[in-house]
Length: 423
Image 1 (cartoon, one colour):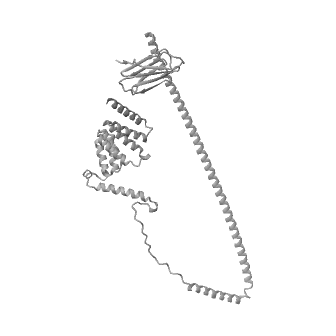
Image 2 (tube, one colour; image 1 turned 60 degrees about the vertical axis):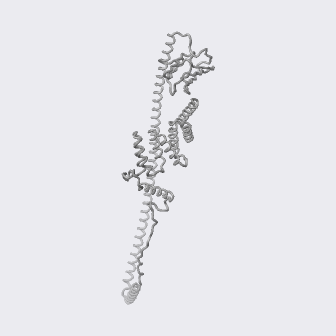
Image 3 (cartoon, helix red, strand yellow; image 1 turned 30 degrees about the vertical axis):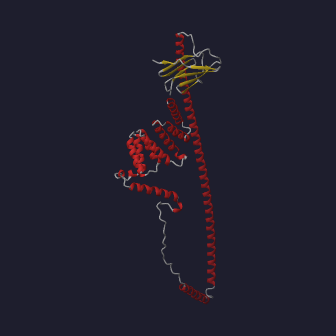
């Protein structure tokens, strides 16, 4: 049987009614509220409240808030007036039943109208999106056509320039050939004139011609002798040049490297190798792939996702043995211990992760929030609410917009106040 709420309180102004419904002993997180212009019904098991209001209200702008086991309503009147009472009094059962039925019918009609309005709005949005897409496609098509036209014009202009250049070069070659032909014809004509002159003076100049040829031969012999006497230089002697390069672990040249970062990486690798070569009994049976902390971290994450928290803890343990400077390993192991209710180990791992997450920067903000939340949760489960509240407040300072953290912090405050009152 439902428990009818009778001890409500209300007050009013000319324009609004303020109603307070206490739900004693029940932690109200959500409520089933049905409201029309003259009918209000609230169902929070086991409590039930029903009211046929004195006058119509604006159910669209009216609001309801849940706080501290109480529901607060702000009901805005349709007409400015003062009510004699919150609910309609001295009404017969048939009238009350008609008001309830009309309220249900109006609510259904309103829901149908809203559904139709949503469908119309959705169709309009789809139509608008389709038109916008078509416009974008048309704009893109025109842009591509313009680019093609510009490219075609550019290629055509380049082709015309090339043709013009070819015509000019051909014209120059033709002029050169004509000039050479004119010179050749001129030389031929001069040779013919010389032959004619030689034929005329052949008999008279025989002796002179012989003396000239003799001198020419002697001059040729002198020139060839000079060529023979010339000496050529000896070829260069071969040699070997030795080049030594600075020994490098990395393939890049020294001038292109970041020495400090490389030295840090080499130092970390050396520490990892020393850890792998150490005499840990847990690491003897591992192969080379399983001795990689990143591989073990991924393995632990998969085990955690399947709910095998013990196997995940073992994987994180081996990864920490190999490299104990990775904060995410302690953070993930803390999550496993929290699931297994190993609360003290959760606090230890979360604290170790916070020690490694230094300095506090924006890149590790999410990891610090997780560490504070997991440690704060462990404190609260150990009933150390003050310490848990401190961790949640520290997480809120890092992420002040997180509403879930804010709500959890408020819950812890209520627990602290409740514990203080009990004591």
